Length: 250
Length: 263
Ligand SMILES: Nc1ncnc2c1ncn2[C@@H]1O[C@H](COP(=O)(O)OP(=O)(O)O)[C@@H](O)[C@H]1O
Ligand SMILES: [Mg+2]
Image (cartoon, rainbow over all chains, first blue to last red; front, side, top):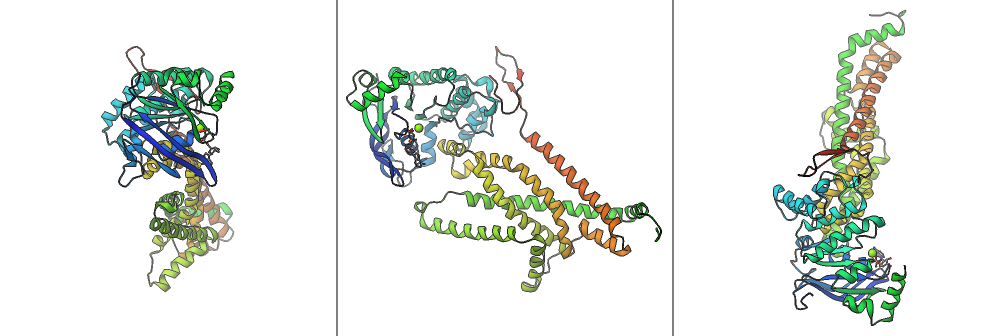
């Protein structure tokens, strides 16, 4: 299993977030170590997406901090663009750039952010499009692809930036059931290749079989965080047990 | 020259023969002002729309926040004023205002360009802003999430989609401008309407001349409308794409209609 002393890539410290009076995250504390695959589970509205979005500053946290290799991401002189380039994000709704082909989607960030040459960017993009099995669709526009294909291109787009860690926000929730498998297969493949991943998911099979650690959230707080064995066979908290009973029943 | 007993078509024929080149020159001026005005107006609209769509929070720094608020208010006033007054009045105020207040005698044609551009800019600013807002926010989030700056995300992802969405409105504005440049005759710009009025006045044959004039306007707007529709289709790109050939898979072409997926 993963070395528990491996370097912490991202640390979330006492993070809180409110929208107006509505407190969505409260004192959230956890970290992701190099090579770890961590999943976040919890019912809808428990703050999972907000947590991920706070981690790359798509939302501004109201309190606490996020450390990247020990440095606060909101500190003076912190290069937010480079940080975001190294912390990839895969969205539930894919969010592929609608005005670009699959290849261009994977190339544009490399050229604009990492300042790679077109040739280098295209080679890298092709490598990852191959990896997700989308290399034959390089010239397709997003509207011509199925949901599963779009999500695989979105994963290739994130990988093309050679990230330290990838954040996934319910990557299979917007997919038709028959397409969930192809995306999960890609994610399993990435996990076994040693990529550091933080995955918000409702796929309990994935959390149990692929992840090193499972974080259960409810009402904006982390209720329990443990290995999949403990969470799925013998959770400490009654709320975790209730949630799992409810979700595994369906 | 036809005389008092001559019929409608004799006069029309006469005007086409004698004033044909002049009409064409007038039409050329009309098209030129309309096209330049639309393009410059679009550039103004892009700038203003961009500034008005920019996110701005107090915590980004007080100086920046206040500056942006002031600039936005000024732009808002500009848009309101130019959308709430007729272009014919704007033409008078700007042309004679420059002369009497600043003692600048603008050349008539230049004044025409300026007036149509500023007027179009006011309309297109709102259209551009609407176009920006019509793009799914997820598009910009994805761009920011791979590390693009706000400006890069707008330039590479949001604006291309916004512009595609407002292209029909842009074309519409061009067509409106072809027709509305006629008001510039009040400041003696020698566009199609001005030329027609002069020709008609010389012979007191208003119906005959303006019959020809309306035909010319119609041909211009009709042609431009068709041209723009064709351009829009072309900009959407081919609805099919070639499957990238690999060793095992030869190059094949999948055909799909727009909006449909190909598995
Ligand atoms: N931009 C926002 N403005 C106000 N409330 C929000 C916003 N985004 C999320 N919320 C609220 O925060 C809570 C948590 O949302 P979210 O993080 O999306 O939960 P999850 O991803 O676990 O389903 C919900 O109650 C939601 O309504
Ligand atoms: Mg969510």
